[in-house]
Image 1 (cartoon, rainbow, N blue to C red):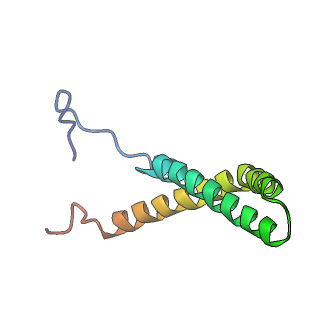
Image 2 (image 1 turned 135 degrees about the horizontal axis):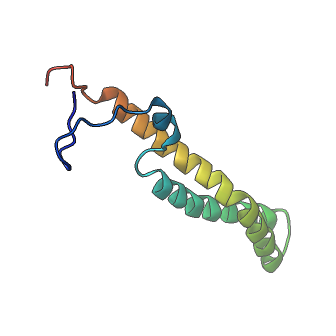
Length: 103
């Protein structure tokens, strides 16, 4: 049985299985924020380029790119950034040695 080394040595409470599914893991918020920045810049660049190719003036194309980036970039980037971190955490957990395995 595991003991709580920070307190009096009393047994640690049993882990709640629901908590494992509710916690996102480490680094998820940071990855989501990085994804927001990348998504914003990628969508702005892509939409501005497409608008310029379609024949809009640069100022109009920048307006289209900014609008698209504000509405599409953060959600798209946060989703992919968070999923990348969650997947990485799950893979690390699957390959981590357990207490019953030697090593």
